[in-house]
Amino acid sequence: MTTTPPRAAPGRPRDQQVDRRVADAAVEVFGEHGWTGFTIDAVARRAGVGKASVYLRWSSKEDLLTEALTLRLCPVRDVDTGTVRGDLVQLVEQMVGLYSGEHGSAALRLGLEARFIPQLTARYEEMTSAQIRTARDMVRRGIHRGELPETISVTFLLEALCGGAMNRALTARASGRTSRPRTDADFAKRFVDFVLTPVLVDPRAD
Amino acid sequence: MTTTPPRAAPGRPRDQQVDRRVADAAVEVFGEHGWTGFTIDAVARRAGVGKASVYLRWSSKEDLLTEALTLRLCPVRDVDTGTVRGDLVQLVEQMVGLYSGEHGSAALRLGLEARFIPQLTARYEEMTSAQIRTARDMVRRGIHRGELPETISVTFLLEALCGGAMNRALTARASGRTSRPRTDADFAKRFVDFVLTPVLVDPRAD
Image (cartoon, rainbow over all chains, first blue to last red; front, side, top):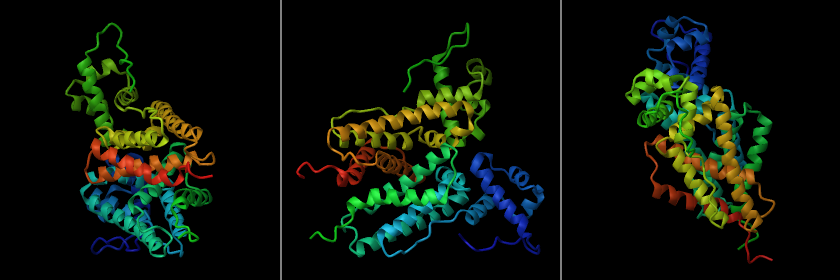
């Protein structure tokens, strides 16, 4: 999550509470209706503020959505637990939480719609590149420590893990379930074991 | 793909070519704008026909979208190649083709939006249940033939394979690539080998 405060309109102090309500409303409207249904009017109504208050703070709906998503969607954090299994469990748990949590619908829509919203395309690419870098670093540390064979396909390993996390979240959403931290953590542990255990280097071998 | 012809309005012969154009336009509009942007007006304009022609044939936009998606989205077919590897390669190849192909955007949106469109919810559940049944049958045949251990988690294996296929298609779409049969087939073979090889029962063992 970025901690950069929203850009203030020149000469006008920001009302933090209004900013927060508008950011929440923006993420909700985008999550439910996508870019086609994303209007300043819909966001202002959802936030219970006047359209003028929104326009005073954001010059366009692209600006508003980009800032709201940057504030509300936590990118995946690198967690160095000391083992590749521990790191990848953290990765999968964060991803299931992101996609099946409160803002999951917005996060999933981004994957489909970001490339049609010019200002968001670049921001989305930054977010996903950072995510891929974090995940690749976890696997590389595992190879470096001798836990994984050097010949392993990092791309395929992450495709299976991250795809599985997304698939799981989509299934949960389709049946109306929301993210539950304990269930997500339990899934992450068991799923990572399923994918990882058969490819781990056996320390007794050689 | 279903081959049931569209329901004819009483007493009026159907113009097959108009039906086809409207179905294509409906899938395109839904793929680009989702349910929020799905209007009879937008579909008629895209198809180059009058709104009246659409209303003559379909009584509601729910009807139109449900029928168009049923006609245009091919559900995953069961292919019995004789080996679990062969079957799952077919499964992954079909899924990558579905999600990164011409109607892929509509197929991916369905996963997010079907539950907000009452008439589509049931149809979507039928489609996904059939897909899950097909995939589970492939894995069960593999267990029955002794290619996979009986203790394998069918759910996790499919979560990894189907999630990986979806992830791959989303990455391709985000960078503007469309489905290319040879590339999809090559990915399917290599990805299935990655996930499956370590868990296959070794016939030389015991």
